[in-house]
Length: 203
Image 1 (tube, one colour):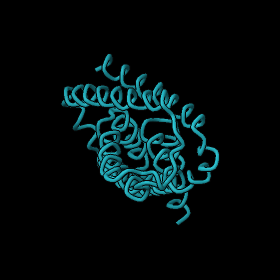
Image 2 (cartoon, rainbow, N blue to C red):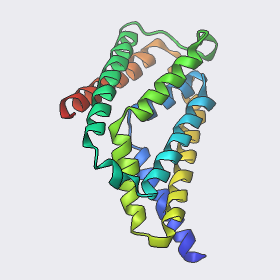
Image 3 (cartoon, helix red, strand yellow):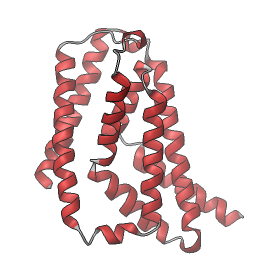
């Protein structure tokens, strides 16, 4: 029992260290959380997607994917184009900031948020490298307890995205001013475009 708890805790810490870093996915969850728009759907997509990817990594699928490196190239190109496009939209919002409150959410915005979340999750090759390959290889070292390690990593993902999505509303007071959104969207634009260009060039 002690070994299982220790292994699960190790998986939790490893998983958390891989997803806490600021990235396109976290930026989207934060924005949706502040807007209080499609938060549950976005959090669920991120957590369930991580669970699937972690399961594939623990199962050893990473070694199989390596046999088709062209697949990651295609994902890198598609992901790069998508991130650049999303970054340009964020840049446009930064030049035309407004106080975006929950009641201002336009109709149909939930569908857009869900599609953006799916794209940022599954078109980002770093997700596969970190979650499938890296975490999967660390889990393999745990031998028979590798699934316990994976369970800890899944729990870390659920806790993080839930806290980020539903805790972001605490910032709604600060982000009720247009100038705050200018800064946030400016940072998001720079990050998205930078990641997109890097993905496209390294594809």
